[in-house]
Amino acid sequence: MSKRVLPLAVTPPACEVTPLVREPLTAQAASELAAVFKALSDPVRLRLLSVIASHTGQEACVCDISDGFDVSQPTISHHLRVLREAGLLTSERRGSWVYYRVEPAALRQLSALLDITLPEAMVR
Image (tube, rainbow, N blue to C red; front, top):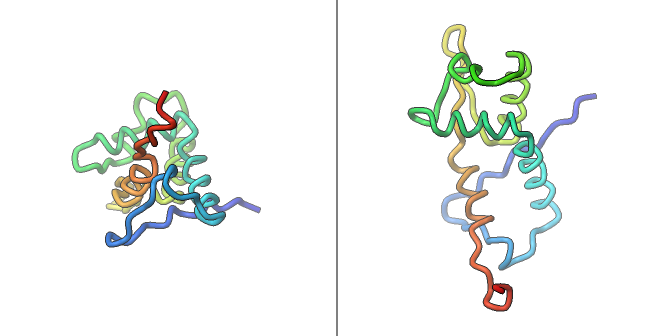
């Protein structure tokens, strides 16, 4: 039985994500975020996300991103699927190629969560 990663819940624009140091995470939020961080914890997946994010239009064909990795194309596809299931990428088939695009809302949510200004008592 395959383990399914829950996608990152995309927060509506009107709702701000509270940084970790201001309000504790709920159990559900922690579980969902842990799945996203788990997807990002692999060096190949982190590099793939970076390659796509830095590509023109934050979109890249799988044929454009496979070079430079010391893993097989099926392994690249597996890693891209993990990132997609985590809600960090979307994909679209165009002819015989699949194009991957960064999901900006997911990156904004992670950024907001980690954008912390430490309280004075914690700065030492």
